Every structure is written in structure tokens, then in C-alpha cells.
Amino acid sequence: MIDPYSIIIRPLLTEKGTRLKEERNQILFEVHLDSTKQQIKEAVENLFKVKVEKVHTLRFRGKSRRTRYGWTKKPNWKKAIATLKEGSRIDLVEGL
Image 1 (cartoon, one colour):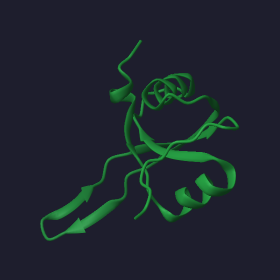
Image 2 (cartoon, rainbow, N blue to C red):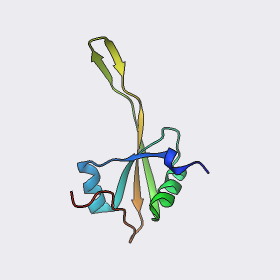
Image 3 (tube, rainbow, N blue to C red):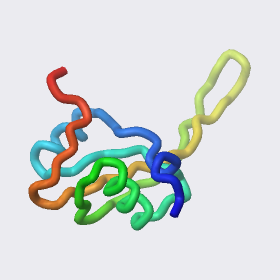
Image 4 (cartoon, rainbow, N blue to C red):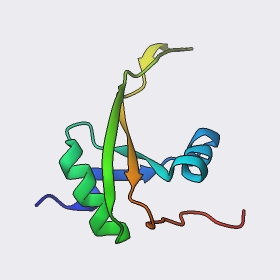
């Protein structure tokens, strides 16, 4: 098995992510580009000790930016939406 810390890069703490967490019991993560849904599911279950019902993934292309030295490109990245089973919960940041 691949190390779960190399699959999940970081949790995404956004307004949309907070709304999904409260309404649908879903958590957003930035994940490695080559990871599969099954690998993401196993990594979330191992790291946070919860049960994952399903995983949706989205790939984003990096944007091109104009700088004073020419054009640069931000890297491509992948987002995963993990739906937790009923009764499972992850408290990433509470009380802020």
C-alpha cells in the first residue's frame, strides 16, 4: 500500500467545503495527481479512522500568469470530495 501521507496533500478549508461538511457530511482534500478513488478512500479511512461511503475527484489545470519576467504556469492539481458514512465525522478546524 502507498503511504497515505503521500496521497492526501492537505484538506481544503473553504466556504464551499464548510457548507458541504455541514449539509452533506463531505470533506474536501487536495490529493496527488496520480491517486485513484480507491487509494484516496483507503488513505482517508486510515488517517482519520472514519468510514468513507464514496469519493468524487476533480482535476484542475494550472493557470498561466504574466509576471515581469514573462509567462509562468501554476501546477495542475486534483481535488477529492469524500462522502463519509452516517455517524462518521472529521473535526479538522473547530472553534475558529
